[in-house]
Amino acid sequence: MSTSSAIELDDKELLSLTTSVRKQIVQKLTTGGSLPEDSGSRIFLMQALDGIDKQVMQKAKIKNEEAAIKNQEATSNMVAAILLKTTRTTNMVPNSAPRELPPNIGSAPTVPGQTEIGVINIDPKDIMNV
Image (cartoon, rainbow, N blue to C red; front, side):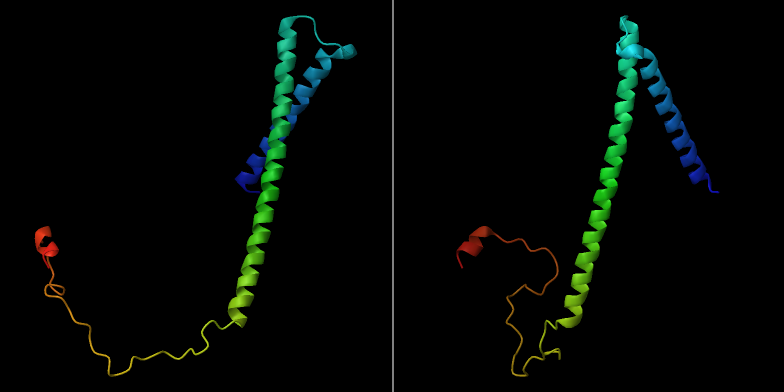
């Protein structure tokens, strides 16, 4: 048994223990179906109920997140399957042979300084007078 599973079992046992203790506190403080009279006991009861509520809400949140993850995985798998089918069966380029340029096309004319490497200071007035 690995250490992580032992830790998880201990966490589960601890959670079960705290839940059962909280339930016993609530049952003891609400014997006869009435709330305790003194404010200290009422505060203690409210804290126990709050702890139970938080545990229940956290469990529900975890279940919802797990369901969302499963839905996302299923959606991803469906999209991947669709993409695999479309890319395997559909040829996007009808003629897959590489295209060559005709031999009569020459090189494009260059502007002076276009092929030089380095920083050139240009005066905006010179550009506007061209």
